[in-house]
Image (cartoon, rainbow over all chains, first blue to last red; front, top):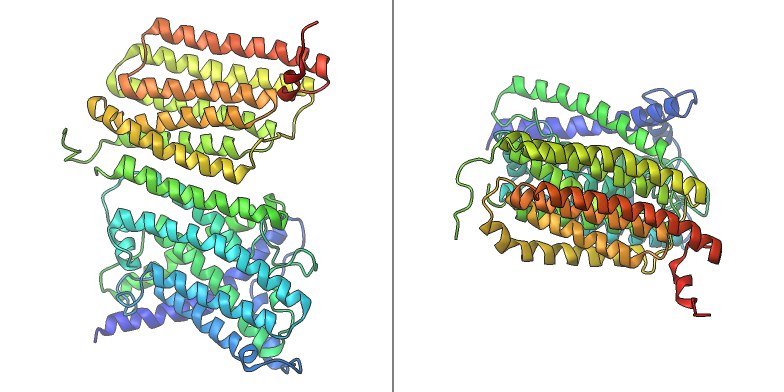
Length: 317
Length: 226
């Protein structure tokens, strides 16, 4: 039993659970500043969560066990995926167990349960949201997989730890394929996290909402868990982006001091990344839902191009 | 078979590869674009990437002729042509819509198929070539084919002319990457051709619009004698 790996793993999970709501609050703050509104406090998501945890759960009469179990499943899926992505160290106990494809599988599992829960009560909004979510999901998933395949081709492995080690500790080289993959990944993560060009996280307008439509029936601690899970999802995606495209500063050696340094670097990167996300959201307008296939089709195409470019330009390296 | 690179590729070559990838990215962006104004800006960006890559090839291989080509690219494709196009669409007031004959996702899929074809066709050629930039021949060919595709799938005259100019960009890039540029005479000739084609195209736009009240070239099919 490698105690360092266990420690790093637990620390990483704790950091994810603590930082995810703060990241969400930071993005909301940036958005508010950019849109000339007065900003909510940085810890607003925590206040919302604690308020929701103190409230009673109201259930519809015909809600089944699945409806009650779904928030816990979704939350654990997202927490687990945050634990798989190497952010503070590449020496984690989960890293031999789950690779990039398993990570995509975890996201898919959470998506299936949230969609089923959306349809469970039988309101029209819930099933509308679920259908839209599945439409987005089936288009976004292949693109995400292609991005992972490109990085796997570069590092000859689908294990996330190996990918990060190869990318972070190589000698300096420009990978044009990573530029393509990076753009594709940004588009996929905007779509997957219900961000502006596809969905608006701040609205409850019937005709446009996707994510919010599915969770309309939830209340109390269930809603709190789902909100926290979506913060964790955003955190996991940000960390994947950092791990694949800006992996500098993630240590592989077993030193406790390196962990602290890595945490500081991570927070810096997340601050910049969150600001960029807010900038994208402010600059772009929400698309019609029928434009979403085109948007995600472009993401898929860019990811395929990344693979082709890798095979053509970099295969000899 | 020439053995693949045994040692690491030098930095300049890596930057050229990056430029090639950006050219391809911009070619796809143009293919997917619905707005004329953005199309012109993308064309300008492509010209600029072309300028940078030509400049780097010229500096690393000490080919002074290529410096002149890079200068021509900068003046013509980054400054002059986009300016003319901007003025043109302001006069014609066709800033926004582009009608496509195929829907955009289908066009993009065909585009991917073209890229694969281009990469395969270019494989034997790049093995014959001995330049530092030989890996990019496939991408240059792909850019040319994508510009062709854009010309075929657009029904309005302005995007077609932009596609024609983008094709010229691709050809120029192919020439730089395969043989360090064409002879100066050929290059000047082509640059001038593109310029003249552009001017003639501009004159035609006005006549087409006066005649048919629209820039849709499908109207031309109805032209009859007498």
